[in-house]
Image 1 (tube, rainbow, N blue to C red):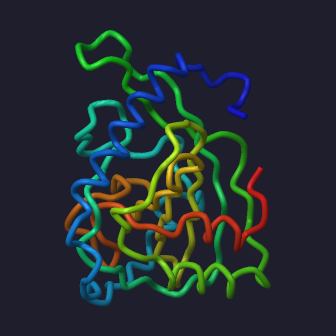
Image 2: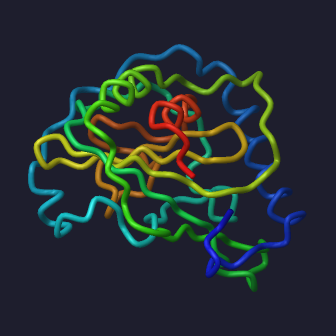
Image 3: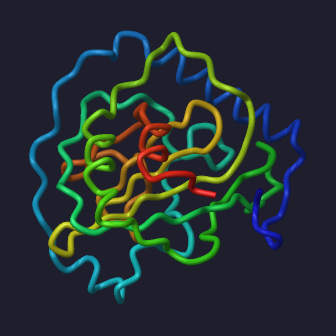
Length: 213
């Protein structure tokens, strides 16, 4: 359930917008099931310190938004990521809010951090790493529910370098990656080690951390 102070949207309108995104993924995903892996990332050890030790931003950064409704990147990733090993991790919930409902495209969502970052227990880090290793390119044949819920970001540190793994808790549990959760929009192109576009495997990521509720 969204936090009490998180504005609600008309469910029919939100479901229609999400359905359009799911349809776009199903079409553009054809032919993208096989790809190589991104180059190894450069470790930037100052990111967690620069964020004053806060692993999760107050709002998810916004970038290109083909749907026009605030869902961000929708194109399937063209290669698999090369991720750093999680040494410390936190789970953060993001509830949607109405950023702009007066434009010609309809409601535009924003994603606001709710609650406090929840540290991931050290004994759960191997399961998280295994789930990240199992991320795949989107399957164009899968069906996605036209629902809407929160997003979860696993923000993890490797020698002070932050990586964000954003999972939709709706639809196909799509994954978007960010090489700097405080500045790089999830799923943006031209990232370091992480990749642009969307990936499959978000359900396994959340499962590795237990129920995120």
